[in-house]
Length: 37
Image (cartoon, rainbow, N blue to C red; front, side, top):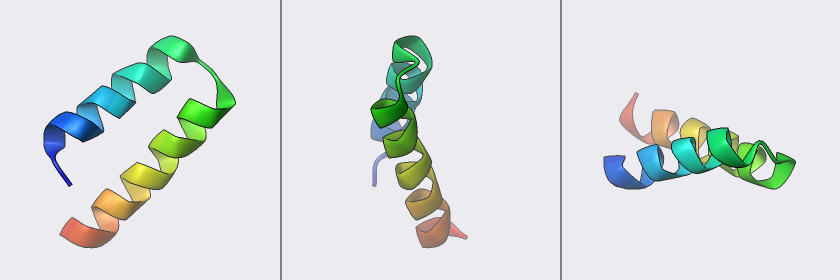
């Protein structure tokens, strides 16, 4: 999981303000934390 991808999804989710992107961001964020914490 690259940090660039996480930031890309973060900004995509923030600017789109749509549920699919936000849920994807949430899933990726939880996965990212699960891997690194």
